[in-house]
Length: 289
Image (cartoon, rainbow, N blue to C red; front, side, top):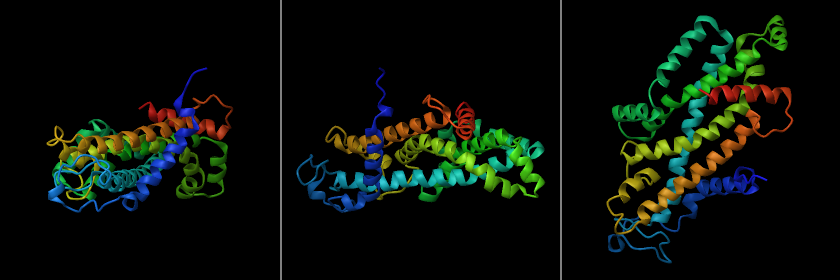
């Protein structure tokens, strides 16, 4: 019997626990994450400061707990906006077809020609650091995946009899997309978003690490890693605490993403309905790109 951690109930429990901690982080923080106490700078872990303090005497644990809302919050907002941009484009592109489809897909190809990190660094470098600029940079590199997945769903469905019946009854493109196409795309989109969450968290932290993310003094895991480099030899917790937080969130996101991918790609080996089979084929096509 093969051991597979992705099939353990503990994976779902950990995902819920991490979500609760991220949502309630500012209320769980034992100290003010912005409170400066230079007399207690770079203090080692203690009963009062579980992860020690940073170079300004700020409680590291409080900053990690509060920073989770910033890092994960930006990541979730960026994924939502990416899906909001990409899904309608993909659905309309696949349904209308012909020149419109060709034009939109060639336009998306230009975004896929460059590595995501390079494009995000260029965008944030040109616009400067900040919350909205960071969101825009991530949307620019992530909307393509949702557009192509939505298009794959439409391509598989557009020749079905029920769509021909909808056309004959007078339904327009918008009605067909909302009533018939979008429901088929929901499952694969959730799987793709879960897989993307870990990648986007790393992207947000990376940009903040380079000074292109959320400006100081707002606590954010990537910027905390950057600050902790200078003092790593004096107190390793400055980097270990936010690094461990990033690792846990990315790991849980990947586990959940794998579980959803198995559900919609047929990896689970269970008997599936016709609708589930079509969703799995679309997700496989998108992940293979």
